[in-house]
Amino acid sequence: MKNILLQYLWIFFITLSLLTVALILLPEKKDQFEYLQKEIEKVQEEVKALTEKEKQLKELSTQKEWEEVDKDTNK
Image (cartoon, rainbow, N blue to C red; front, side, top):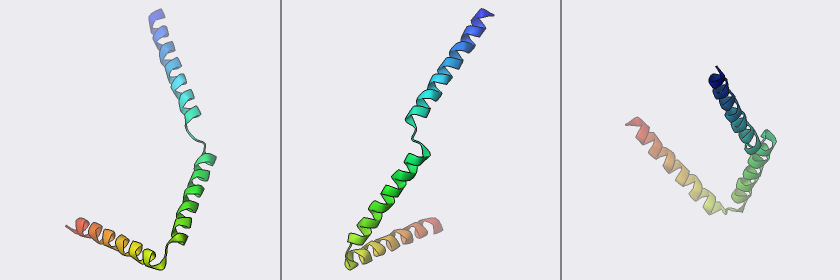
């Protein structure tokens, strides 16, 4: 009986320690939101910096990629 209780105690402490480590290391929702906002701002700044010709080339490449995806899915 003592052996079974000892095993359950080990399982409990290992699970508790893993949960504690996970809660410490995982970012909070606020941090995730701020990170996403920063990334969106970076992309918007990059788009503003593009010339008209670069914007056209980017749009053309995106269209070609989608056409390839459409061809692959239609096969």
